Image (cartoon, rainbow, N blue to C red; front, side):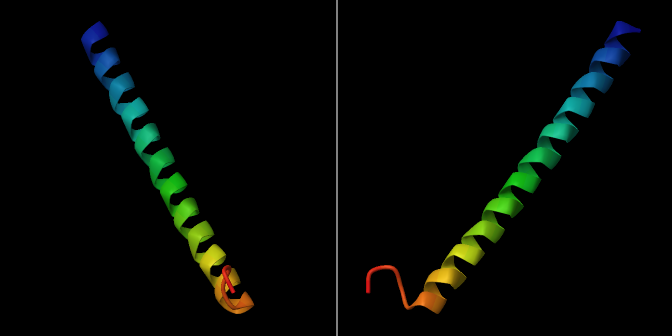
Length: 47
């Protein structure tokens, strides 16, 4: 019985970790796109 519970918990925690990492990566990608759009609109950061 403990074996089934531990497998279920590890599967659940792995799924939660995967979804969390996926959300963080998507948020970082969107922030990077907004950052580059801002500097393209402003004419570049080094000019």
